[in-house]
Length: 552
Ligand code: NAP
Image (cartoon, rainbow, N blue to C red; front, side, top):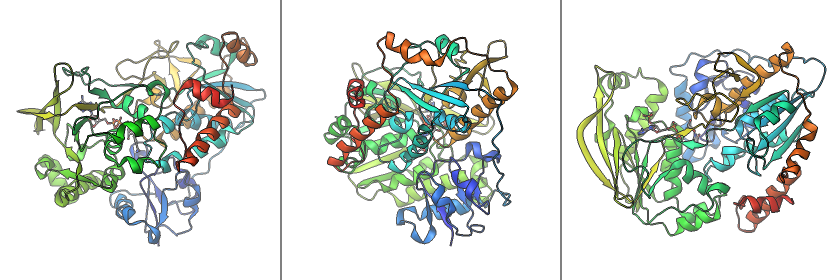
């Protein structure tokens, strides 16, 4: 028997360090780890001890003989990784906690999402390091709360890891505080030895085509925030009167959005989707969602596990036209010889399976189109369609190029899902082209190329908007390790003030931070309200409502 990792895998590698035979790869030490879609168990090496099951924060690991039918393809997905990856099945490397000099160190962490928490987890291992975590919302967990799709409840259980960090004595929440408004960057640096910015990538990338700003053309970042009950988007409205919606981009966010658009609202009603979104989706006329990828099936930006799970949405067919499966000569040769990278090979295999399977007569459908890029969003007063161009391979140039072939897709709703983008933070340098704060292993690097003492970044603001939740674990740990090394080297600037007056300073501005007790009260209120209607929680979607629930 072997254990098998399935879709909710968060890549945070909690399982790797507990495996006695090192059969879970890629490990954080292996180069593939940074880009791995998920982790995989080697069926040849697994000794069936189950240690990984207990360590997995999201319940993604099962014994092969207990796999649900829909998870059976993961047996092959796990095994296939080992066809083209040489792995070291030696002992996992022990983690050592370095000893710090005497004296308390005070760190402000800005943001309360995964990267913030993973960095904090490393910092608060040291009892002398005290972390105050700021977030502009009254709730923690960043994109785990406001980004992960409501139907992916297993993924959200990673919150348990974060809440155990938040229970440490040397940690406190300062939620509902906007750094840059309620307290400035300089006021933080005066009061803390170090400030770690992990405030994410809060805006969307732009397509740069005509018609992009027409009503009916919306950013996936906004749509996701809306259905997840983010207070900034509680009053948004989307027009679902068209039978077809078009999503531009084929990353995991595009797939999340597509599923939410077509999943039966009665099924969504058992999730933590925002009530306003559920109500609006109940009267949706959308029956077809077209997902546009500008490159080939081999370049789908989604992970295989998410692509695989599209077939599990009840009452929705997955449609791929065999003509869209063009790969280009070189890749086609590698695929037919079986010499292609296993992740790409699986992508191609799954797409071909969908194409072969065909539509099964469901009244709703996901239509995946490849080598198809938007050139214009059509409409006068609002969106009526998308003009697309067919792309093809240019073997000489080694890239995709547009052909002369264009066509129009009629739709009233275009969702641009082409990635998130970081925004500049007051007081920090910013690389506008990349949408990140320049840094060296999390140490902020100024325009002169020198580390700005006491300034750090983690997560999407540090490396751009890529990678799932677990990717942030190593990103956050790297930043924390840099900070810890700087404590040991004595290179952190001594604060001129004290963190003790932060509460007073905020109070003088009429801002009452929400602490762990306040968040616990919000959490309880939401869970209680959810229980009454058979849901994990019923989210409170306004800042005033959240503050009231916090008891403040
Ligand atoms: P993403 O993975 O970067 O995908 C962006 C997509 O937009 C790609 O298909 C890209 O195509 C396309 N695109 C970019 N510019 C375009 C343009 N001008 N015209 C047409 N298409 C364009 O971004 P994402 O989906 O927002 O996800 C962000 C990160 O969060 C990813 O790492 C993702 O895996 C992660 N995430 C994970 C989960 C999960 O694990 N379940 C869920 C949600 C998000 P090209 O590839 O050709 O550039």
